[in-house]
Length: 126
Image (cartoon, rainbow, N blue to C red):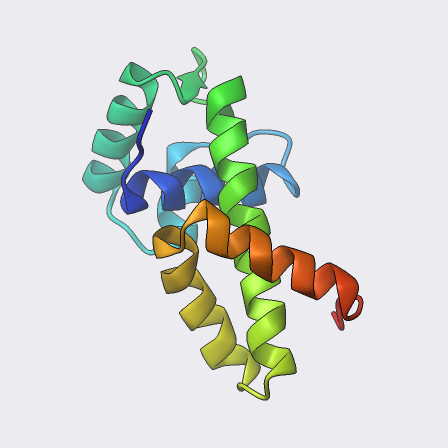
């Protein structure tokens, strides 16, 4: 199933937040992304309806298996692309912003080629 860029960003954010928190709530997602409560609420409703997240009775958001797969895919793309750009001499802040844009548009084929290249020619500098 296809997922729009905004949905991918929400899933990636939930994944990132879940690495440092035992419970992720909509307010955490909104603060992290700089979005309003109504925007986050709408997005969570759509992601829940599409089977990417579950929300428990206390408002805790969890990724489903398909949601986690998408989130991990985008998270990996972001970090590998950011690392590549930094290695090419791009300022880290610009590299992070550009990686965030590219991660959603790049084909699986092109990303796989970049990933192979990065694996062959060195380890991450971070």
